[in-house]
Length: 315
Image 1 (tube, one colour):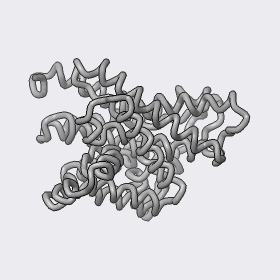
Image 2 (cartoon, rainbow, N blue to C red; image 1 turned 180 degrees about the vertical axis):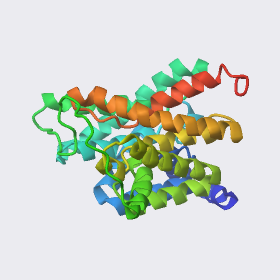
Image 3 (cartoon, one colour; image 1 turned 90 degrees about the vertical axis):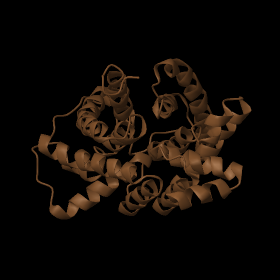
Image 4 (cartoon, rainbow, N blue to C red; image 1 turned 45 degrees about the vertical axis):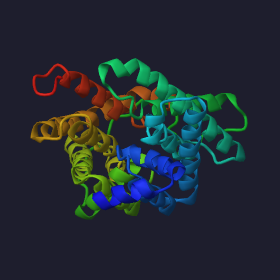
């Protein structure tokens, strides 16, 4: 929307860069959208909002100090991985004073990993996206087993053999709205209907098509697992939906020409992301790590690489 772009440009540069970093979690390089996202996180929980703020500031500052691309920093590309690292570590680890230092270090590392992956993937025109967040968070989550001052939180899955899903149970109609909105909110680890709605509004401020892709992703992330007989509790929490949300936005709006063909491809990618999520969840179960956004990253990479071989999208 034009009014949001005008406000974005009027915001002082340091604050604009930080807010754009938050917005880029959903591919929205718009400070107004980023502000909506950040406010939503604080609505969901003060600690999560503070952790996201510390993360985005730390990762962005590290990019400046290390002399990375000014254009990329200004677009917020060195902020969104740090935005995710903060709430992630506070969700899965016990809250201690030392954890704030842990968040700063992880956020700084996410910028280093992003710069390295940009160098590797750049020639193929494939984005690193949230892979630095995933790789950094996995390393820091596993590392806590070696440090006495950190301990696992109750949300972090315990290592174990994957269990078969229980018999499918139909989800009541009144739970659909909860599952759909939480599917968007869980992209930033928020277990809240209100936060999910605010995220959708923030995306729509930047792009109506982007919001439609996000909505389509969460619908697939709820309906398809139900069809496959996945755990109803996980579906209602939005844990099957947040990866398809990002996949459909990436394929159907951001990285391919936004037309009908890319929308169809995005739908297919959304379905595949659900399967990828289930497979990765079982693969990671023995070491007790969450999938985070890696199902989205893997599916997006495969579809974008494949699009490069297609007569419809190849340059």
